[in-house]
Image (cartoon, rainbow, N blue to C red):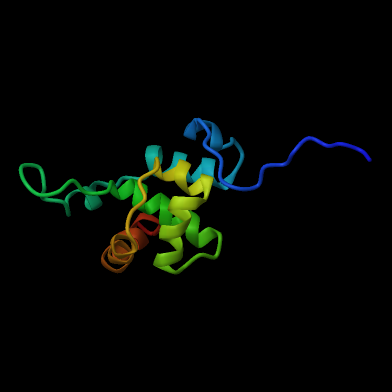
Length: 124
């Protein structure tokens, strides 16, 4: 009987370079470039008042990239987005392994909807 090399499909510890997971020419690559280099996120940054005290917050750029990547994949549940940030390599790479809680994601979506829409409003 023929012998084959084993195929690993379960959990495996790997050293991963997140930057190399986002391939040029893909949606994720364009999304990362757009959010990190082209969009003015100043209105998002002004909402945070934790310079001196308070817990560190998730960068709004990271949350925006997570949400837009999720929506592009048809994932709209904040719990499923949270899960993707823990389990899917593209989400881990795009978020820098941030893993925000589903309540953080839901609050960002609920409270920043107007700012997100403003980012993509071509009339401005």
